[in-house]
Amino acid sequence: MHTQILAPAAVLIIWSLIMLGWMAAVRMPALARAGIRIEERKGGRGQDLEGVLAPEVNWKAHNYAHLMEQPTLFYACVLILAMVGYSQAVLTAAWLYVALRIAHSLWQALVNTVPVRLTLFMLGTFVLLFLAINALIAAI
Image (cartoon, rainbow, N blue to C red; front, side, top):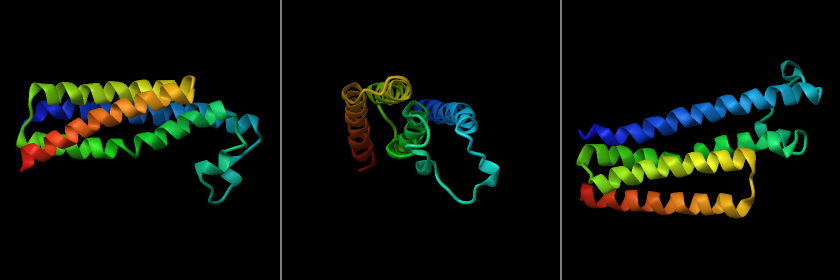
């Protein structure tokens, strides 16, 4: 197995957990300021806080949800590539994908203007497409 490509995936997992912590660290005080006592609530989802908490508070949750979406395809590509092999260009692309996802997270959590966020997302998507094509070629 070619394990060096697993490092970018591990970094993205750690980054996702950092975003989870950041989300909680921002959300919990915001809930208290809004007078919402979570221990008194039944059910509920994060989406229920839209329009209740300030948008800037919810941006971290939005990004955490995004990290649970497209990056799952990245993890699958990385596992395929770790099993069948890859080039240095593919390893570099995996690190580039992680860098773009972190940049996307920071932009969405702090600034959140859509044109820049969309650009970061699309760049990451193209890099992921490159990885997926290479995974397919290597697997067949």
